[in-house]
Image: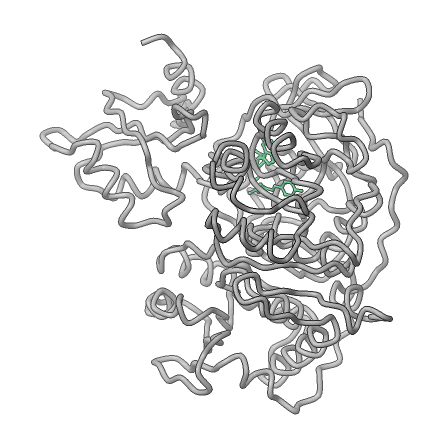
Length: 528
Ligand code: 4UV
């Protein structure tokens, strides 16, 4: 009943990730590790490792170490890996925060993760300061990556350059693979965002799993990191894979098509990781023809379903290999992908299981295993340890045999090629970003005019998944669909906006009060 990877298993060394990446630079010290896309400024591996060492010393100087958490709230920039790996090297865990978050959303993650320091950029300071006005937070300092030497606020604000100028000794921390490294947030299959406890072993294993598939990332590769490092796709596949392979990672703080094309062309980027909305632009936008981007060898899409036709159109237009993979924050994140040397594999598939990954397909209703079409369960060294402080969510996602229940429905061919064909979990993906319906429903219920609400994902005219709210009004309340959408938009990060509203008399619920999303989805599909 278990479908195994077609590759041999990997061995995962029992070491910390910073030691694994920077312990022995060999002849890479002089090579370029990070290129700041907008300015072209370069950082070598030697400079990066030295800055990682200084950040770790700075954390030790503050009395922070194993068991402590810092939050990193920043767009992609060359200092992101300095803070991330510097904190890890000092034994801390890093909770990476979505750069689009509002102060409330940020405060929630700071509180839930117990973060003691918040690292951010000056452009995000207003939101950072507003979040820290909230009660019950353990944050005692803000470190501003591009801050002036000494900034004063209600809470201590320090510039990163001050932290890195420390002459303190780097704390001697001996890390094992079981220590916690990253705490990104994900809603998983149900509920609000939860801290995903990823160990050094999890993150390291996923790098080795990707490498063993014959992924041709080498010191000559230039990877474009336009997708955010705070999300696990950017963190592992762009930042850490680039560092591990001694490739150059070109950072972009946010997506803008002209800037994206300029940076690819100017830096001769050969490997571009995207989510499906960027594929739409690459296949169709006239601007693409105005740039010399024939340097691109591989475009790799993940984070939401890629339409095979669309993917093929990108491959033809850019004269490059187009590949697709599948991942989930809880899987560190990659469990399946199309190998570099198999561009003949169906682009509508997610490829094969990575080395050391075992899969089951399980009927979500009956629990029958080995069905042709069923919920994808995954086991392997990349599977998260647990959800932070949430035994109940952990128990309903990770079973006693170590299989993680993904909430995605898949099929598999005799050759071990997997397809994602449906989703049985609540989660909505808007442009590859997570939108947890439970969070939107809770927010809608705070409106006095709303008696009940449910949110599901529906397809818009372009086939893009968008959040739709079904709303039951209080008696006598007079809210329009636009009122409801504005109410949400003012209180939440832009990717989580409700984009369609329908008023109904009653939300379908089970006897135990659970929203029957299946019924709402069926209602959507029924002819009008
Ligand atoms: O937790 P998350 O936001 O995580 C991701 C990670 C995606 C990655 C990362 C590295 C890769 O190399 C790669 O190929 C993909 O998105 O959301 C997890 C959910 O996103 C959906 C699915 O519902 C997951 O449970 N999803 C991710 N990739 C695909 C997908 C895909 N290729 N096709 C369909 N759904």
